[in-house]
Image (cartoon, rainbow, N blue to C red; front, side, top):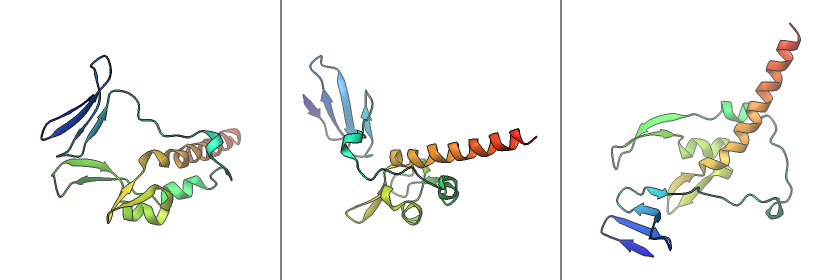
Length: 126
């Protein structure tokens, strides 16, 4: 069932439990369960492991910021900067850029593995 008022729109399941809601003023989306993106191998081709992930991460910049429209303090990245580093995660929505943060995880995983291998190599050479 869908219910709403002037500020929020919510979706309830058959047990009459709120499953997700969107605040139309703030733009916040809240789900009572996991947010899931399809990542099945059957949907992908030309799969390649990310190389030189540490160098990609080193070009990223994490920032704290205050939203101009709401004044809310946040943490994240700047889409225009990410466009230069990892354009696959940047999307244009009617002239305003957004970032698919979850899609950055693959780069971070491979960067950790690269760094871990370097640490192991350094420890082995002691």
